[in-house]
Image 1 (cartoon, rainbow, N blue to C red):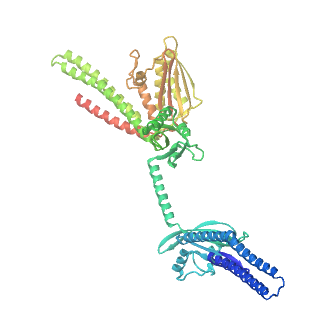
Image 2: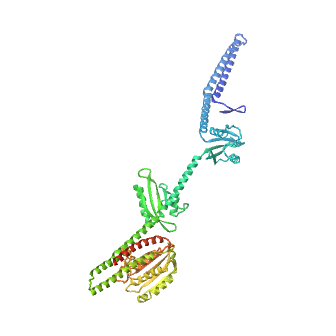
Amino acid sequence: MIIKIFGRQKQVTFPGIRKAMLFCFFLAGLFAIFLGTGLVLFLSQAENESIIENRQGVANLKYLVLLSISCFVAMLFALYKFLVKPAVETVRTNAEEQNRQIQRSTSILENTTDLIWAVDRDFKLLACNSSFIEMVIADTGTPPTLGENILEKSYSNISFSIRKKLYEKALTGESFETEIKTDDDGRTHYFELSFHPLYDQNKAITGCSVFRTNITQRVEMYRKLQKEEDSLKEAQEIANLGHWNWDIVKDEIQLSDQLYKVFGLDPQTFEANYEGLRDIIHPEDQEAFGSSIENCLTKGNPHDIMHRIVMPSGGIRHVHQKGKAYYIDSDTPVRMAGTIQDVTQLEEARLQNNMQYNELQNFVYIISHNVRAPIATLQSLVGIMEPGNEALNAEVIQSIETTVETLDQTIKDLNHSLSLKNIQENSFEEVDLRKVLRDIERLLALDLNSSKATIEYNLSGAPKALGIKSYFTNILFNLVMNSIKYQAEDRPPHIKITSQPNLLGGMEIIVADNGKGMNLTTERRKRIFDMYGKLSGACEGSGMGLYLAKTQVEAMNGTFQVESEPNIGTTFKVVFPSTLKTSLKRKNGKASEIKSTIRTVSSYVEDQND
């Protein structure tokens, strides 16, 4: 404990204070005893020598003095017992607690590997811990001395000017932290310096304290984690996959950076919660998505679903989402975590494969019926020929020629359909639809006059299209011809042709008529665009028109749609996206595979003819 004695501060301990107080009480009691004893002896002598005439008064005075001395001693004892001793105990308790606090503080300062020191306003060392002393000895070979100017020592491996600025900044009353990097023994070390001003009782700044912490391991760990995080981001970007975490209680969803890229969303504006995520899912898939989440939360089933998302631009992407629920007990889910992968290319490839498979099935059907039947007929005709029977043989040869012509036309149709698909991107050009329609009107002039058909067209919305002119001519030719063939019995055909922009950023051509129409069942809707897919035997034609038109539309990356009502009419819609460049390579590859199959069939037919 530090106290002021005659204006000077002295370090004192509790045992010293206690001894001083007991000594004072002892001197006071001893003085009272000596004083009382002296008075008693004096009065006794005076009484014996008859110095005082009133002996009785002297005797009374003697007893009074003895009583006063006894009372004084008792009072001293009482003061010590009830006042001084508790005060001494209080002082002792406070002193012991202060010593314990000092010991704990000293233990904390001395048992840390951090360097701690303090300087005054003149940059002189006020105090330091053992770690600081060890560092100074390791750097300079001598221990630091209290009172020495710390700026003259290279304690922190920092330049003089920088060290001075840091100390001066702290001496202005600002607490702050800074990091430094040093290179020792071929290894880089990182340290964190923490500066704090020191104040006296009047809140005046008297100096500053400095804490130096070695953060090398923390920095290296952070860099390692940062590298792993970058690797994870790269892997997610390559796989087009991201992860998510849903806090069910707070309804907050954390999405990885890659998921924002997959969704085409802005992390700053998107409200990442369940409703926000559900809103970007395609409306037709939202119910299935909600059921999968509910089954995962209530039954513990894995969340595994393929669904579509709607991009802010209006485009569609296919994603594969997997997740798992986590519970605080067996019945209460608190969060879900999982992954989402963009599988648009895989899904498009799957759909393309399905389309290719269906088309191959169609070719197999054609080959098995339209090719196999003529071959079987040829085999039968060859079998009934008789040597010498010229009349019969001539009739058989005529039938063989007819059958061969039919077979040859079938092979030509197959090859023609394939040639339509095997187009090159650089073949596309800007096509004026008005010129195409004028060509069609000239080609179908006789059919239009004989059927009294009229054509009304509005091409102002999209008068031009990107593609191949001959394809557009054939497509519209077949659609107009189809309207004439299937006209209603009680009214002449009226055909309305419209071209306009669509929501995909491209354009669409609509051909609507007032013909007899039909009830488009699922089977009919499927067959209407098949090769030789005639829905009625009452009409002339090979059934190749709509098949070839559809093939040409798909070759230009478009799609065909059809709607029809009996006795109302039929509407064909040809939809083209904003660009015709996508999927051409896939279509050409598919055409090559199919063409290879047809070559095999052609070789087989030639072998049979030989």
